[in-house]
Length: 115
Image (cartoon, rainbow, N blue to C red):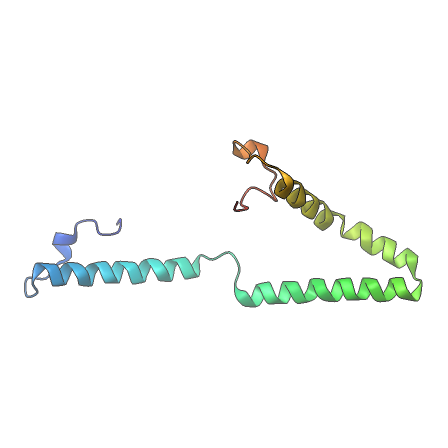
């Protein structure tokens, strides 16, 4: 059922129509907010865990570089090439003066960036 569709059929006879409408609308809003919270693609905990793992990765790479283990650092740099390419796409998009006209002009990394 779409929000607020057939409101009249959901209104009990005991309540005045405006109070019942407000009650039904409030229930719909609460239900939509709950659905929105459940449909978020990432939670705060997942985000914080991911950020801390990336920070540990960078810290480890710096430590190995300072220790002179350049072969290991090279392997780590090669493994992080995809993330570096994503950041290059994002930086390129931020430098643009004109927004992409259609979704085909965007990359998968920049499609959902806000201006």
